[in-house]
Structures are given as C-alpha cells and as structure tokens.
Image 1 (tube, one colour):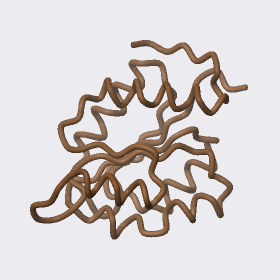
Image 2 (tube, rainbow, N blue to C red):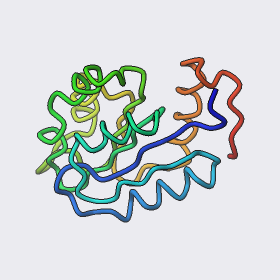
Image 3 (cartoon, rainbow, N blue to C red):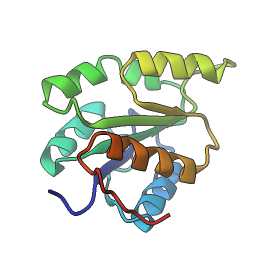
Length: 148
C-alpha cells in the first residue's frame, strides 16, 4: 500500500492560466499529498499517461478559458480504457464561455464522469477535505490521516 495518495494537477487543453494550478499543487503538498504537477496547456491524454505511470489516485484539473467541456469530451471513457476507472476526477474554474449558471456546468461535468466540480474562487481547503473523504470512501486509503 502506498504511503500517501498521488495527485496529478494541471491546466487542461490550451489554457495557459497556470497560477491556480500552482496554488492547488502547493496546498496539496502542504496537506501531505504526493503531487505530480503538469502545468499549463496539458492535453487530456497527458493526464492519462502520467496517471498510469505514477499510479495516481486523483486528477485535479483546472480550466479558466471556458473550453473544458470541448477539451474533455470522452475523457472518463478514455480513463476507463486505460485502466484508470478508480482514479478520482476533479475539475474547477471557468468551465464554459459567456454567462451561464455554474449548476449547469456542474451537472454537465458530472454527467461526463467527474467526481467533483468547483466554480472559480473555490476554497482549496474544501476541495482537499472532499478529496480526503473521497479517497477514504474508496477504501484504498481507509485510514488516511493527512494534514489539515
């Protein structure tokens, strides 16, 4: 059994907004997670490849340019094909273009197979708390004790 969960972070697609991902990565490291930071403009296939190579437990993606739905069509299915059906999928940011309702984005991305969907300006501590609970519920880390 791994000592601590491995989390992949990055900004998906051709989005160059990387500061949020760096903040998320730092908070995860501070909370005791092993983090593999992919950075900006990461193709979805790269997330899958790195998740396989590192035996990742979760992928936390950000997108602020509004095209994440297009970038991630069929992503969950590709994860399943790659043997990553147990890997948690989280996404956050500005997930659609123009004015729209976050609840619609959340519903759409959950239908696409994402476990958690966060709006811009979400509290990273809430996401870390959600991650801890989700990992514990998968029983892979049933006795997970991480920093707060």
